[in-house]
Image (cartoon, rainbow, N blue to C red; front, side, top):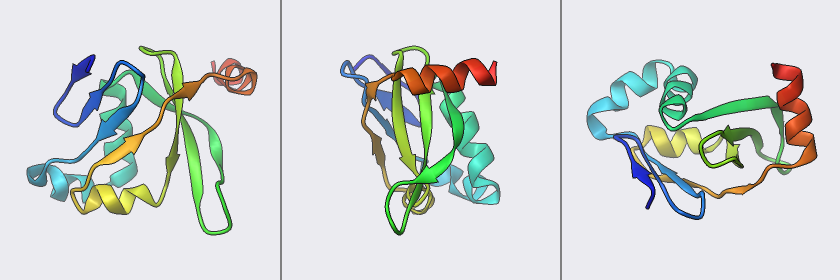
Length: 107
């Protein structure tokens, strides 16, 4: 494990586990997306691009980790798991040319 915070653990392979402690669930449920965005910023991560389809029933968003120089796919259905106090594991992947192009447009 590379580092650990109150909300997440980052591993040598880039994977990231995030979980909302029970004492913070009420605050999380007030504004889930804002809370998640703040949580990710503590781990040097941010949403990039726009939401897209993952399959017929689910949408997701790309998260860029500037500390590890990798990306994750966050399925929006995982918000329900976080709201229930369960852990969500994000699997690292290499940054693609498309990801770089999106980041260039953002900045």
